[in-house]
Image 1 (cartoon, rainbow over the protein chains, first blue to last red):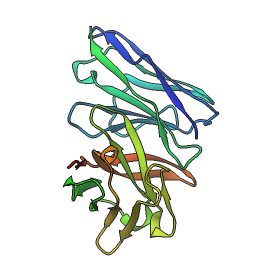
Image 2 (image 1 turned 30 degrees about the vertical axis):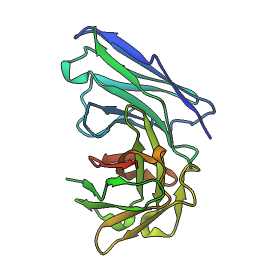
Image 3 (image 1 turned 90 degrees about the vertical axis):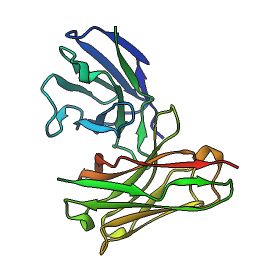
Length: 108
Length: 121
């Protein structure tokens, strides 16, 4: 099973600033990595797939990068609606699909 | 618009059973894999089970293997998760998701809002 590790657990950022979230896989997952956003009381929403492709309707301030074992989600100029929990997920070697434990982006 | 709607959750005693349903709309249901992903209270996301388009192949997390069973009825655009011998650690919100992608590589999009399962005496 591939273990996904996200850092930091919590990121405190001021509105308008940049947030950089990391995700590390225990084995290479090529570019088969997705990022999801989850707000309280809501279902997760797909942001990024194939490590760097934005899903339909996702603003350009969200970008993904990386391949192999190291991945990054960057949110430039954080908006109020971006404060949420973000999860990475590998879909290269499954079953099982595995998720990171999440990074909470909170208002500083 | 693609949409998934779960139902069937509730309170059940340890050792009991429950059947969850996931009704889909807005896409050609029969050709897509469907997944169940759960989230325990205050915790992260855990993949539970998947069924291939056409229903020929099923997959389960080790934590539910032998207790849960996934099936689909393409005539009703619905996937089911049959949960038996439920344990307290199965308490979670259960989301169904559509497997988007191609070949062997599928991400989850969209997600249903989820149905809550509570296992307690």
